[in-house]
Length: 301
Image (cartoon, rainbow, N blue to C red):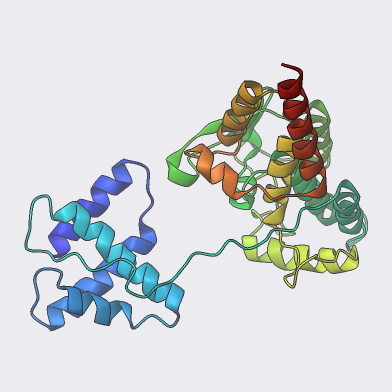
């Protein structure tokens, strides 16, 4: 079974998937099956192994990893059994994002600029990072991996991120100017230096950024409209919603705008972009106005 797993992983990786979690799960299952002298996937064993997950969501993820492997492997070896993918009945729930207002983003940046030590690079680093995430909708991992060489006159070069895609992210003139001012204070020694650094000069780590961002949310007095607190990742949701609000009128032009947005955000397809959209009062007013215009044109014709 391990040979089949390695072949499967190699093929998926060749098409752009990292497969690190899938590798861990499938090899764990292979060891589980080997203890039972099973060389092929058997439904009951797959369910028993998946049931070892501590939550319904994790049990579901474990079983679905096996199902994806079996669908691939059955083409050459029909001896594998395909378990029912929905055996645990888990449903993926979308967490309602917090859409930051322009005032809230300004308050976050101002709170970052008041960080200590006063006069050090740290306040400027976090202010620049929050401003860049707000202006571009980058994934936080993409921003933290940026090097000085990735900041070009044409925009940010985002190298081999999700699905091993590389893309160029153009910057608004104000965003480009803000990043240039930060780098002037940053004074990098080489093009390989990370853009955003900690006090030791190393690339910022995600956990450190997340923890500090949560503190800045409290300092800025930002309150969620749901039971869950605003997140760092919600800046990406906010960018997508604001970009949709800026869409030109007309169905065909709006469609082209959405396709461009999906490419800008590094999505494989437009459905992933829809996941980031959230109904806001401004968007609903735009929808209502477009509906009224459409109906009035129909009555006139």
